[in-house]
Length: 105
Image 1 (cartoon, helix red, strand yellow):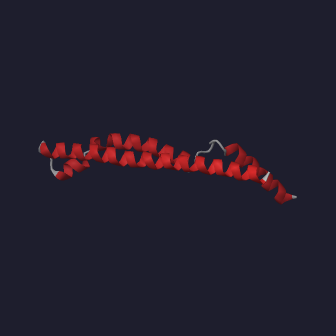
Image 2 (image 1 turned 30 degrees about the horizontal axis):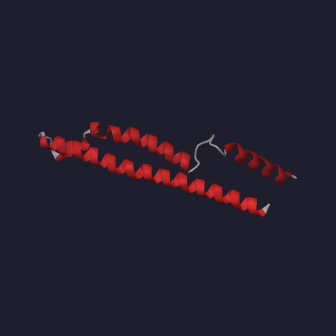
């Protein structure tokens, strides 16, 4: 029985590491791609005669960054288990209710 628990924990740990690795890759791609596109748009604005301040404060340069950022935030919340009804939510709630019942008795 103990070996089965260790094997289950190992499988869960590997799954968790895979989720974290996927999120970190997503963050890296997000930063590289958006850095490139924002830099390109700012350079383009400056080359067309905008001042540096105007180019950096132009909201349209950051639209893609913003929307993808929302998706990245959702991915991060899911990865770090902050979604209310994730995969293990029901199990956590059952455990929480059982612990509260044990405290009262």
